[in-house]
Length: 102
Image (cartoon, rainbow, N blue to C red; front, top):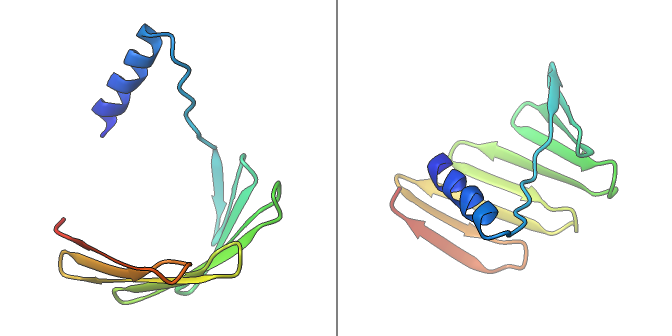
């Protein structure tokens, strides 16, 4: 993947295309992480709570075994379940999805 991104960035420069890459520096102290993009994360047990100071949004996710579920910044819930190399889920709009393989 790194190689692909390098090729994409070089191609963008060669053709005069502006390719923006989002990145933020983060600092972690104990269970609390704060990032330069305004995001903060606090992991307590199996649950991670996130917020963004710039947008005022909050979210959370909990992982128990192979199942992860959460609430997005709009207050809608979602979930995923990994079984072997397959992943099944329900997105925040209630749509089911699946992925098979690695």
